[in-house]
Image (cartoon, rainbow, N blue to C red; front, side, top):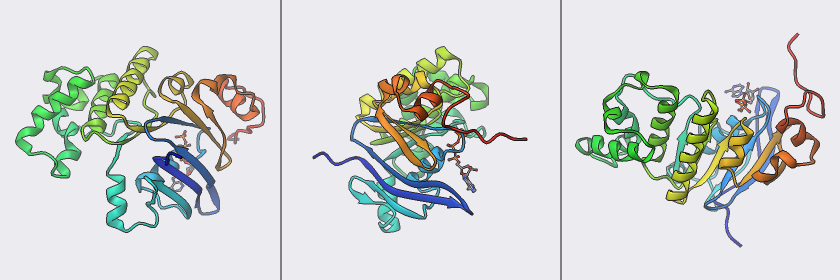
Length: 256
Ligand SMILES: Nc1ncnc2c1ncn2[C@@H]1O[C@H](COP(=O)(O)OP(=O)(O)OP(=O)(O)O)[C@@H](O)[C@H]1O
């Protein structure tokens, strides 16, 4: 049987008395794309942050290539996590640095590239996301939202990561630019043969970039299946969420 690239079992995380993750089980098979959906505050970001090491879970297992990063030595956990490239929701670009330095930031920080070669490398990666040479010297603040997403994607793929995480990659983009970014994501992931996890609220995007999908609800994966089945699922929670129905099993915490 093929070993999952990422295997999560019984993952729990509470903040104070608030149980955010309450026993997450998830398998992501090598070379496949998993989309994680769920309401605001359902723990999608906490899940991703637990995998990349920004949040320390209370208990559970997070295996990468069959090794539990939560039990591994600090050095080994860092090695396993070094395979991960991340596209943050807001791009997380540094306005104080030109685009080329943003793109090669991780490579320079890990001494994977000489500074003298960084600009050429950035131009090469920028071309893969459809950006011209002259963008390399600009500040991120001079770019449109769509171009910033492309730069952030270029940074995420620069180290050719075996695993890629995308946190709401199309949020804030118009529908056409959203579809263009999704196409770039699918192309990049396919070219690199990477395994991916994407968080999204955009069902069209979920179906474009995901092979499989998992829905978080009440701290657990309440449903998982093919991304193509998201809109036709008869699961009442998935049906309410994907169609944005105001009434159903999901009770929204309304502010008074
Ligand atoms: N460091 C933290 N300290 C305290 N509470 C936190 C912390 N990080 C997350 N939370 C809480 O955990 C819950 C889940 O947050 P998370 O960001 O994972 O939600 P999400 O599903 O990604 O939501 P959204 O779709 O709105 O981005 C929220 O109630 C949030 O307030």
